[in-house]
Image (cartoon, rainbow over all chains, first blue to last red; front, side, top):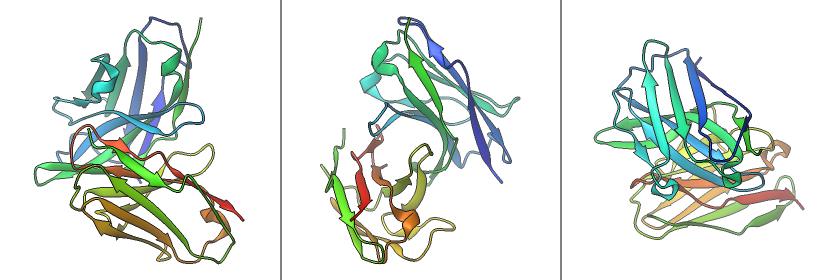
Length: 123
Length: 107
């Protein structure tokens, strides 16, 4: 059974870098049929896609985040990571990692999600 | 960026009744649309992909329809566990975008 688990600090100071890791178990992250993505949800708000990456790199990011996002994949650890720099209070949210189906030149829905991790930006 | 608009914001339905949720895209998606269910404190759960294909383990009372710019999620007979927030998501183009959600509440 595929499982994803987010980990990282729950509190980040303004202007610093938010760093999260998603550990994948039950499947190999080195499967070209999937991308690995991050989505967030501010308190009481809807879902916002952050970015997705294949295991070999070349991530797509949400342009609304003004190039503050880096997504990387570590195949040796079966993990992928999110870095969001220059954070503000507006980045306070639950961050979810998820697996995204890809194929035939396109990428599609997210079928497995982690449980999410709340990250608060505050001094 | 493709803008996704869901309606209504809130839908009040009695258990056993039918619920119909709408999702509109600002440009044609063909059938590149998914529906997710989210309960308080939980991650989203994939219900429907390809506009009309139920994900693994999803009960038959959930059905999706539509193509192009207009899509519908129908829950044929609401069960107690179906009261939740539902989101549509397009994956026709990057960036991926979600609708604002429809909350299905007990009438």
